[in-house]
Length: 86
Image (cartoon, rainbow, N blue to C red; front, side, top):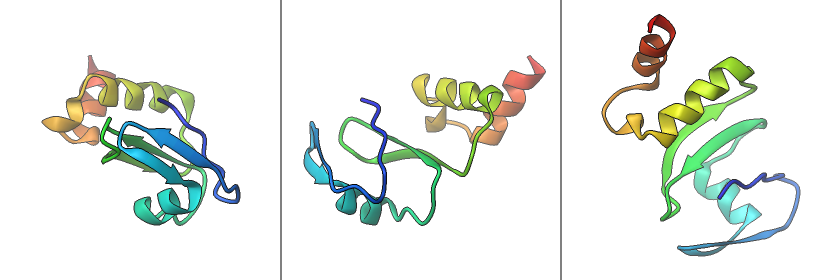
């Protein structure tokens, strides 16, 4: 479930692993600056994160990397290189 989190808001998100507040999420993920993109699994564990702004062409590669679970067996740089060469 995609969620846009504003670090200044006080929201509670309902997940399969239980409720979590914005503040809890910021502390747990150690978010230091925005924008930042974080991908969590269904248990709420961090799978992959990208600090800063991401151009559309790279973001589409990131989405594929996470959706197809390539993070389980190769680095993002390796995956990105294979996609861009192929």
